[in-house]
Length: 226
Image 1 (cartoon, rainbow, N blue to C red):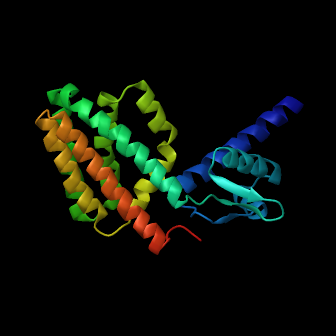
Image 2: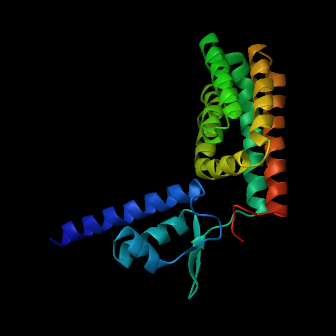
């Protein structure tokens, strides 16, 4: 009986953890937003024990912060965090793009071109969320083909924060349109099988996105709460 109760409590904690993490990643919960145990308990219809367990696990995983007598809140990414994440991406995805230029087969090239055209149409139609999802397939395919196991592991370790920054970037006026232009330059380099040009195009794209996100963050931190 006791074991069954522990299993149920663990399942509740996991449910709360997963739901809160997804909301943090997708900006349903903004950076700096307080996470009151009592209101979360009412919202999820569970006791405060699984809420507290989920929050401690989220803190361990770097998604929330806490202080005694002040409670928990969504962890705010600092400018240094953002710069570090983009710097790692620029280096590793740049190298991967260079390698992919000589490794991608024709099927992959055609797939990337088709995805780029779909993303272009979605941007034109104003469907920014779907356009972001489709355009991300370019990065995923390049990493899958051009990245080695360690590169993929490092990127996967950053995946959830990368997703947060993708969404923030997509909300910037003109960013998706500019990304589409930059993705096209990457695609052309890949079609030419030019590893130097492909790496340069990828690095330029990620550096450009980084600059815009950091400028937005410094000047107007919304949708990230102060």
